[in-house]
Image (tube, rainbow, N blue to C red; front, side, top):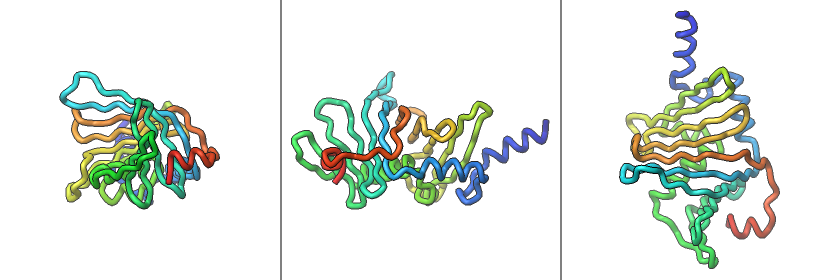
Length: 199
């Protein structure tokens, strides 16, 4: 019994990604492998001012060479585009609008989570892996004491080789949870999709 408790404790201690087990390394490599990815999602925003979370649906598109794109289903919601040139909001009328630097910082964290870019995340967060007998797993990133990052904790949850949930927590009452449908792996984006959702 003591041995089981010790093993459970060791499995939840902060690690560097390079210290993860071979099984974890294989899982993360598979999750980070796609050159392109597309998935429907439901985003739940929790705030202390509302009893119920605000829920928004959309589609996330990721292209390794082009960055991250979030297309929300809300009427008149702009497409959110993040790439090496920065954060851009593209409106339905084709008008592009720049975004404030703090929004770009938060989106870069989200992109790192979607892309399983652990080296980027570990600059500001300590990593703790966890897995359950039913095959579900989580990677929790806890803000380091000497870092001034907006989120206190970031969590990736999944099953087997699929990401199912992302949680970004500032406080228990101020957080965002993103539930992901099964993704399309390595879809070929059409020229029209590239023009609309990337730059």
